[in-house]
Each structure stands twice: as C-alpha cells, then as structure tokens.
Image (cartoon, rainbow, N blue to C red):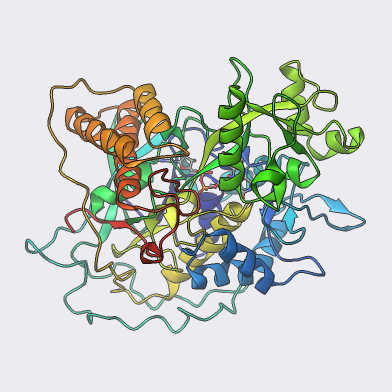
Length: 560
Ligand SMILES: Cc1cc2nc3c(=O)[nH]c(=O)nc-3n(C[C@H](O)[C@H](O)[C@H](O)COP(=O)(O)OP(=O)(O)OC[C@H]3O[C@@H](n4cnc5c(N)ncnc54)[C@H](O)[C@@H]3O)c2cc1C
C-alpha cells in the first residue's frame, strides 16, 4: 500500500492551502474527484473578509460574525477566525494571490451584515478563480502528488479490539489535556518554522484511528487503498442537494457522508444558506449575483418596480442573507412572479463594469446588459453551514481524521454565515490542521465526542426504486427548502429513508455521489425536523420564532 504522511481529499482552497503547508513536514498526496480546479472555490466572487482596514479591528469582525450567526456561533472559533485573518491574508499575498488595490493599498469592499468595508477581492468579482489558480499552480509545481479524477470512497480505520470500544486510546485519560495552544492565539504564522514533531514516523496503531483512505480512479474504474498518518477532508459543501443552487456539480457532500459512515460527528446540518440573488433566466444556470452588488448600491425591486427590502428590515438590501432570501420569496409569492429584480442601472456604469467584470460579461452573454436593465434574480442554495464537527484545530472525534473548509463545522458561522467568511475560514483552519498535526502527541485522541449525539433513524426498507439526482434535488428544494414545516419534513424524511434503503452498492462516481447526497439529505432533513424553532437560515413556518432552549447544536454520530 502506498504510504503518505498526509492525504488531503479535495483541491479547493482548503485542500490546496493545507497541502502547501503540509509539504514542509512530510509527503503529501492530494486526491480530487475532478480536475484540480473543479470546486466551489473557483466560483467565489465577492471576496474574502479580513479586518485589515484602518478603522477595523478583530473585535469588530468577531462581533459581526457572532451577530450574524443567530446565537449559535462558537465564540472561540470566531475569535480565532478574526484574530488570525490578517496573518492568513499575508500568506495568500506571499503565495501570489493578486488582490485588487486602490492607491497602492489592498482595496476593501462592503457586504451585507459587515459593519464596515472589509472584503478583499481579486480581478473584481473573480476572487475565487484567482485564489484557486494561484494555489493550484503552486501545488502542481511542488513535490505534492496530485491524483485527479480520483474519488475517496471510504475512510479506513484501525480495527477496534472489541465491540463497544470507545473512540479513545485505552491509554488516554478520559479528558485529555488540551494542547497548551488550544485556547491561545497561535504566535506562529506561515513562514515561521513549525516545531519539529516529537512523534515517531509510525505511531503505534490506536484502535479506531485513521489508517488511510480507499479511492476510486474514475478513468480505470480501479479502487486503491492509500495509507497515511493524517487524513484531511477538504471536500467542500453539498449545494447539489438542491434543484436550484449556485454550486457546481462536484458539491455533493461526499466528505460529510464518508465521515459520518466512519463514525465522525456531523453538526448543524439544518443550517443551509440560501443566497438571495442568483440569476433567474429561462434555460440559464442560477449564476450567482454577488452580495457585493448590493454592497455597491444595487437595489431590489419587485416586478411592479417597487423597492421592498426596507419593509422587511432596517438594513434593507444589506440585511443578512436569510432575511433577504425570505423577503424575496415572500415578494415573489405576493406578485405571482418567479423572480424579483436587482437594479444597478442607477450606479456609475464604468464602476459596475470594472467592479463586476465576470457578472457583467456573463449576463451580457445571455443578452442582458446590466448597466441598462435590472437583473432578474431569485434565491438559490449556496452554502453548507453544517458539516464534520471539529474543534478549532480541525480535529474530528476520530484520531488522525481532520476536516477543514466548507465540509467542516467548527460552528464559526453558527446558524448563518456572514458573507465572505467562508474563504477566510478555509485558510484559517487549514493552517491550524497542519499546525496541530506536528504539535499533537502521537496518541492524540482528537476532539472530545459529544455526549448527546444522535444516530440517524433506521432506514425503512420499502418497495421503491432508487432515485435520480434530480429527484433528490427536487424533494429537498420543495420539502426541505428556504421555508420548512413539520409535515413537509416528515414526508421528506420517510422518502429519503426509503431511498437510502433502495440504493444499490455504488460502483462508479455518479452512484457514489448519489449515495452521499441521499446521506446528506437525511442529515439535513432529520436535523431540521428535530429543531422545532426558527433560527438563522433554518426557518420553520410552524415554529416561526427562535426559542432559548434550542440554543444548542444538533450532532449526529453513527451508532451513538
Ligand atoms: C458561486 C459561489 C460564490 C461564492 N462566493 C464566495 C465569496 O465571495 N466569498 C466567500 O467567502 N465564499 C464564497 N463562496 C463559498 C466558498 O467559495 C466556499 O465555501 C469555499 O470555496 C469552499 O472551499 P473548500 O476548499 O472547502 O471546498 P471546494 O472549493 O468546494 O473544494 C472541494 C474539493 O473537494 C473535492 N472532492 C469532494 N469530494 C471528494 C471526494 N470524495 N474525493 C475526492 N475529491 C473530492 C472536489 O472535487 C473539490 O476539489 C462562494 C461559493 C459559490 C458556489
């Protein structure tokens, strides 16, 4: 079996950034199921948040992040995010990401629910593409082994000695001492040398510890097992769960499903962010019209030409995404239209074209000049707030298994992600994963398991054919969408459970993706059904208010 110090699954910004740091400390294999640049990252438009402006501070960024998260942000994770942001931006600049500048300084834009301008961008609205291209070309020129079109299908664990064995090594204390760095701000940044690992090259096997990963080479159809000391999942989100989504085809939640099956904890899956403004034109993909367009002064009007956001929230177009998405949905229902309009015709034309070249060009290709006509938009599934539960070091409850980026859940976004915090999150926690791998003791047991984790309900075998991806997406959009209720969720739960039982053992990439989408759909639906309140991105019409007793996370663990 081929052996690596690090295997990183995923080649978006989280995976590539982790790989570029990890190569300093051992051999690195990156597995990615498409071509290297096929990921959510390359579609990111608006930018990456960081409190680097003269008026700004980590405290203000932290306050905004916590306010957006509707009571469920982990304050420690958000503090790490805000305090380490400037250092990670320095790293990205050193790696060569060409952030836009104004008068020789990095230019900062404003986006919804940020109290002041703090969004760095590149190529106007092509931030993600610039980041992805910069990091992927560095990775390809380095000593990192990258296997494209190779899908991770199973996490391999050291066999457990006995039924009922816990996640802990038998020699570890029940409540292991945290690293001395666990709750302190790291003093080290990229460029500083890491402390050399005290751990031996091949640590003693710990039962239940990760030993590698199984992967399917899509081109040959062959499955291969790879061994590693550290397995890092950086597999992105699950936007493909929904019929209308800004996410590309690869966003099928594989890593979350793989991790769940291996016994990792999955948290906050009911919080799925719907972006308020995706292009709505017949026969055209729901291309994202960035939040930054509203940040620059774009106004939302209904099909009768009336501006409506001030009726819904004092912050009007700059209210948090969930509020704007529901307001648009409400307005669409009231006017009987399938869209509203985002109007930038009152803004300076040259500025619109310079600031949003990608959006301008894409719309123009569809016959729409956005400087002359308002843009038809409607909400679309956009971002997976939940995912593989980790601590602030990217550790899961399985020793040796780490997660970072959109597939992970530190609860840094709580119930609602603040715009442009996700690109930031990827680099903050990818860096911490690598730091942890070289600082943690060899018998490190990972994150403390959650006491009240729950298992998914038993799959109910039923006489039903296995579904298509489109059927799953339609069910999720219609019954587990922007507005949910107990009846629709119960029906969706029963259908997904029957589909889960009906799915054959997957043998190729489409079948694996479908299996994993159904698994993620079950996690989203069951969590949404359990949470009998409305909070952040999770809105239940039968429980429209938040309730204090629900200020807690819903965590799933197989076999819990
Ligand atoms: C249209 C759009 C615009 C956005 N705009 C912004 C923005 O302006 N600012 C912001 O902060 N965020 C934005 N986001 C969100 C942000 O882009 C993502 O959260 C972030 O890029 C996620 O990075 P990642 O590395 O975690 O995942 P991704 O970039 O999605 O990468 C995941 C990788 O994992 C691979 N993979 C998945 N499963 C497997 C498997 N089983 N085996 C092998 N490989 C696998 C995929 O092929 C891919 O390479 C936007 C997202 C979209 C879709």
